[in-house]
Amino acid sequence: MSNKGGSNLNDTKANSSTKIEPSNAQPEIKQDNVLTLEKSIVDKLVSEFGDKIKIAYVKPLRVRVEVDSSDVIKVASFIKETLLFDHAESVAGTDYPKGNYIEVVYHLGSYTRDELAAHVLALATRTSRDNSSLPSLVNIYKSVEYHERETFEMLGVYFEGHPRNDRFLLPEDWADIPPMRKEFRIKGR
Amino acid sequence: MSTEFSNETLEKNSNNTGLQIVKESEEDRLMTLSVGPQHPGSGHFRFTVKVDGDYIVHCDPDPGYVHRGEEKMCEYRNFIQNIPHLERPVIHDSNNITYSYSLAVEELTNIQVPRRGQYIRAIASELNRQVYTLYWLAIYGIFLGHSTMFMWPTGDRELFIDLLEMLTGARVTHAFNIPGGVRNDMPVGFSEKCLRQISYFEKRLVEYENIFYNNPLMRQRTEGVGLLTKEDAIKLGVTGSVLRASNTPYDIRKAEPYDVYNEIDFKVQYMKSCDCFARAYVPFLDMKESCYIMRQLIDKIPQSGEVRAKLQPNPKGPAGEAYRRVESGRGALGYYIISDGTPKPYRVKISVGSFRNMLALPHLLVGAKLADMPAIYWALNYWPVEADR
Image (cartoon, rainbow over all chains, first blue to last red):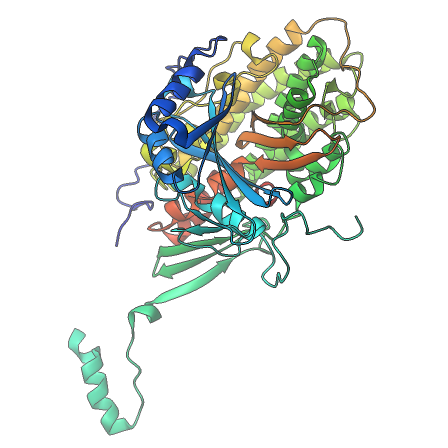
């Protein structure tokens, strides 16, 4: 029996006389307005992947990278291992019926590198609306697990390699198309 | 003695008595318990746990009982009409959930907020942080069996609600932040009343610490329970007090200061012990720091000036996208808004702290004792309505 998260009566020694000491050392966060860090991130990505990636924009604290779904695992691993963006904040799927595609954007942030604390890197990839399927990033970013599951049920994008492409927020008896697709209309609207 | 009750002995005996003996399998040892959604101990959130004796061996969260489709609703209304329904997921922290929405819309439509408006926004946001954290602390107290800790914060929360009522006109759902500033200016006498309340509340915080955080029973139930190491916290991508309790000083107000927060002197509150006690104590430290922030905001606010920028009837900007975050009571709260150039957003994605922290629940509960479940679950600062959106 693993006792990873649990307590044991013997090793929990509550001692109310010890003073509670909050930590005091503060993180040093620098910011600059000439986009040096943003550009260095872009340079590293471009030198590694060349024309496989497309830099959509470089704004203060925000960079957006677009990749083909076949390269998304390689690019995501590079972003995590080399650029040290260590967690995903959100995964947003958007339906574009006019272009007949669904776009999934991963917003990645960093807790480990102080200078990246303010930065968010958006990694975008696309799949067709008819046979929506993307490789899952759950083996690289554990934090996308529930976000991808939500995207699956809300947009019908199947994530290959995800442990559970399953109902999450919707009712158990939901028998309609994925509700975030544009052809799903709210009644009366 | 032990062989007397073994399966073989029972089988032998059953031949004589004619009784059917069913062997115990590994699955039979486990019992599945459903927690919520009706039970107030989980607050509109259901998860199932499998227990082996006292220990939890499996946990499966099942959210969605208060899913309202906020993101879909946003696509049918214009940027201003979206504000009142967007604060419904966290009515106790409504100024923070509309704050990052306003920041994102301002970036899309290129609106500048007047200085006085920025300060009033920050004051309202800090007041709401106190309201939310006091509500959470009351619930945490009652689920550890400490009824005084339920009564005191609920009573003190009322005073902050009175202040917000004076400022915004509504007690809980304010719809106060709008793109371009805030709805109305501070009423006369608000600053004085606010300062009086802060002085009173700072004295109360000392009493909270004495009665609750220094209580040996509370310490016994939380210290060393539900350890979330720094590496795991980063891997799971948790945020807010859960992250800061795991020795990671990360606060959006410091990491990416919005509006006036880069002019305010404050410290990121975090702890190194990584257990439930740290997760319960970091929000308390936040409340203390928030009092300090509010004093500065009231001191530094420009004495006159506009509080909101003039808006077009249907504000719209060029096609584009924005991702903005603020630090709410439950951690980073981000909005990803895509605009196609019309007054209605094309897509709104709300990235909320509760949804991100939910991933830590199975991680912490598996291997823990069932009796530790309330201490672990409520220390996650989880707000089911916000997670479901």
